[in-house]
Amino acid sequence: MTHSKSPSSETVTASPPRANSAPGQILTTAQMRDAEAALYESGVEEWTLMQRAGHGAADWIARASAGNLVTILCGPGNNGGDGYVAAAALKARGVPVRVVAPIEPKTEQAKRAAATFDGEVLDHAAGSHGAVFVDALFGIGLARPVSDDLRRLLTDLRASHSLAVALDVPSGVDADTGACPDDLPSYDLTLSFGAWKPAHFTGDALAKLGVVRLVDIDVPDCGGNLRLSEPARLAAPDFATHKYRRGLVAVVGGAMPGASLMTARACALAGAGYVKWMSDHDHPGHPPDLVKDDAPLDDALGDDRISAIVIGPGLGREDDAQARLEAVLAAGKPAVLDADALNLLTPALLESCDAPILLTPHEGELARLCEAFEVDGETKRERASALAKATGCAVLAKGADTLLAVGEDLRFFTPATRWLSVAGSGDVLAGIAAARLAVTGDLVQAACEAVHLHGRAARIVGAGFTATMLAEAVHPALGQML
Ligand SMILES: NC(=O)C1=CN([C@@H]2O[C@H](COP(=O)(O)OP(=O)(O)OC[C@H]3O[C@@H](n4cnc5c(N)ncnc54)[C@H](O)[C@@H]3O)[C@@H](O)[C@H]2O)[C@@H](O)CC1
Ligand SMILES: [K+]
Image (cartoon, rainbow, N blue to C red; front, top):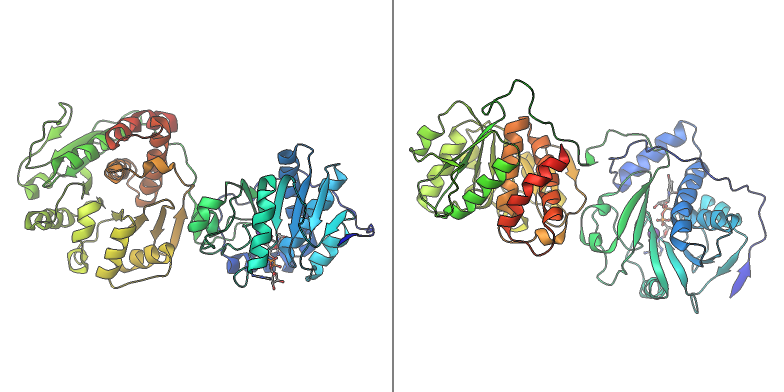
């Protein structure tokens, strides 16, 4: 069936360019609903927000289409409403556009938006092909799994268009967790409205979103606990500094000294003024510019000038390893615990430690730590938060969707290159984090800077690198981020 809507008297006005009102803000569905409710109470109309969203989307879609045919799949709710507004705005700009609407608009705003579009509306996708497919079927209002018929429709439309754009989130994605069906099609561009949603930075949907961009609709900063960590300029050493003031880092080695050597190398290149390798093993790769301290660890760690310690890479899990971890925790210095230090960590070991501690677990280490500290959560985000609260530590949960949990707060990151999934990558990150901790004295800042430096180093070194190559690339990465 094809029908044409009668033109509505609604005017479709182009919105002026907007500055982002809260660029790093991430809101869950419930927080987004609260933010919207507050806006409505302050006198902003729902229709105004939908206009901003639809016009903002139309700007991106118009560029992507380069004047070629756009097909917008509109659902029954306000996500569909955004789609109709975008369709009307595109048509007004002379871009050929049609709407596929398998379900009639149901909300007041979606009906109103549908009435502004006087172009072609189909209730099926047969024969639909074109340049850009826009998914405006379901957004944050997804209430249940998408039916087989609608999933097929999404897949067919994706396949019959050169580019696919999702409005807010791809239909079928849980905006709060990033969970999605395996057969979700892949998108080239996902446009988030008003604020980022957790699904833009975490969960399985990450692999499907393509490039993500924020369309500002003037949602103010709600002071929420979820934030996107954006790379910031790192501070260069100040005028009156010296090597100790720039940060002395103790890199505590163990049974497999090669790993801690790599950590020490990354640490030295990430801005620390002085790195001491505390190892009772030698290694043929020990470089001349790395000071080795083989005094008994308690004594070595007694140096008051130490401003951060890192332990875990190559530590091993023998009795001696446990004793070394105990010595680090007893030193009362800010510390980064990685790898085997995480495998050895127990609530009893942390009991008398009140120094700032950063834990850097990957998925498996996070699961073990959650077991050891008797906490759990359905998602990585919940597990990391629960662990942060149980330990009082900052938890940098690594992986394709790295996130940082500190108390009630969560920081998310734009995903780094997948080439970082290589043995030793975490050892390098731990070294960078320790350097930044020594330099900044701030756990959250150090962890965020470390993730950005690590990702930058990976981009610089390119494809198919080893961890040693990655550690060397920390040097140019630091230079780029100053
Ligand atoms: N309220 C606001 O402030 C704004 C909301 N905006 C848009 O509104 C969206 C949220 O709108 P809604 O709350 O109306 O929700 P949606 O439009 O995401 O979807 C809700 C509708 O879809 C139906 N539905 C949900 N899951 C389904 C399924 N699996 N199969 C079949 N039907 C299903 C629901 O019954 C309801 O009718 C956002 O994602 C965003 O795109 C934007 O217009 C910007 C402003
Ligand atoms: K959508």
